[in-house]
Figure 1 (cartoon, helix red, strand yellow):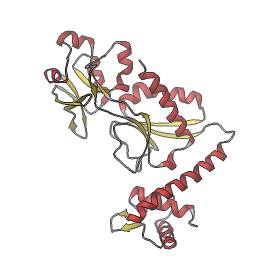
Figure 2 (cartoon, one colour):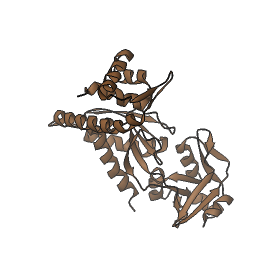
Figure 3 (cartoon, rainbow, N blue to C red):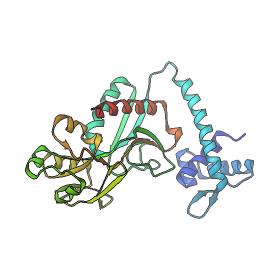
Figure 4 (cartoon, one colour):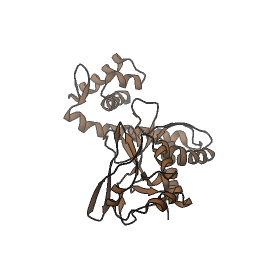
Amino acid sequence: MSSTLDLEVFVRTADTGSLSAAARNLNLTPAAASIALKRLETRLGIRLLARSTRSMRLTEEGARYLDSVRLALETLSEGERAIKQQGQSLSGLLQLSAPSDFGRNVLLGWLDEFKVEHPAIRIQLLLNDSNADLFRDTVDIALRFGVPRDSSLVALPVVPGHHRIPCASPDYLARYGTPQTPADLARHSTLRYMRRGQANSTWNFYQGAVHQEVEVTGDYLSDDGEIVRRWALAGHGIAYKAHLDVARDFQAGRLVPLLPGWQGEPTPFNLMCPHRLQVSERVKVLHRFLQARCEALLSP
């Protein structure tokens, strides 16, 4: 039977692509981590990771074995947590990353409520529109919009059917008119969001099986989602925002949703974790809390 440490070294090395990084994560010396990995491979009689001078990658056998190891470690960890948490209140540190607009205008208040419900929880919040690196940054979990593209991460769905909505202030619409079709957006001033130096100038819309792509322009461009929202509130143009970011603005009449017969780009909202071992009881409770709050916010 392999030791838990040997298995953890294998999983961390597979996640990070580096034996030295795995050693740091587990508070081991590189030599000790190397011995643990070799011990596991010797017991199995197979090579789990192909080594090069700069990196390590999973072999075909290693990739198949990895899922089984994750499940075994998760089951063991869940059992230990269940025993420890019997009769105890929720406690510990939540290191959370979130998009700037949602984080400041929605999540911040919700975390205050969560803290009241669970006073022993400590919260560390990082707001950034660039995706945090869950293996290197000082965050354990991250709220993200969009389809998960990293297969090494676990996505806990918060709002799986979430999408973007074009919107503008009543003042802007009174001055420039209300677009009736996606094509009309090309004749309006749009407020574009920029990510990694690339402006989002192509907006996608769907109506059943019909997909329409629109190239938009405008004088306002920012890499901060909150700035784009503020420009929309100020009447500078039409924004293409995540529904969660502007739901309260719709309810208050500060912004008006546009093109009701069309659905904007799908942007499922997920709570991301590096691996299932990171899904502690406090993360599960936060996940359920956020699901309930988001459902209430988006309800008609």
